[in-house]
Amino acid sequence: QQQVKQSPQSLIVQKGGISIINCAYENTAFDYFPWYQQFPGKGPALLIAIRPDVSEKKEGRFTISFNKSAKQFSLHIMDSQPGDSATYFCAATAGTASKLTFGTGTRLQVTL
Amino acid sequence: EAQVTQNPRYLITVTGKKLTVTCSQNMNHEYMSWYRQDPGLGLRQIYYSMNVEVTDKGDVPEGYKVSRKEKRNFPLILESPSPNQTSLYFCASGKAGGTQYFGPGTRLTVL
Image 1 (cartoon, each protein chain N blue to C red):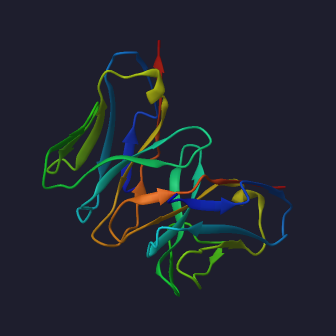
Image 2 (image 1 turned 90 degrees about the vertical axis):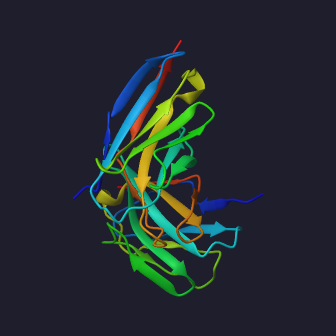
């Protein structure tokens, strides 16, 4: 049973465009929602994270939108750049358990 | 430099030959975990440890063992590897309930 569903599987965006990746979760106990960015040959690295007490968090060109009632959250990358080309994973965890449940990943390609 | 290290980075082995992948972190984190990454399946947790001598199964523990005798080390042991354990493995560490930091990965091929 996949507890975090991520879409799309792959995404091609032109330079300067907006990249949007969506995730939906089932477990209402989840209370921490990080996004990880992974470049080829590297381990995932934390990009941005949100807790459900806010509906949006912005860090530079990256924004998480969170809809608690719909159990959905999304990553928006504004002004997408070729250097943003990577695989993005959403994840969720509950309390102090630290067990991260990951989505299946989105491979983003930003073209010139 | 704060980091998680894994060794080896690449390993090709044969079915049934016991192997160990080491993981070490220098950030004094209580929590450590192993994941495997497979195309289309994302990252799935194998085992995790909340502290020294405390380990528990993740989502896909079959065929794997771990130990946590020291806070900084968390080796992954495959007693009798099989081809379906061919994968990309990541070790991670972090504080309980917080950000996890991933190692560079170990690409394992079991023939």
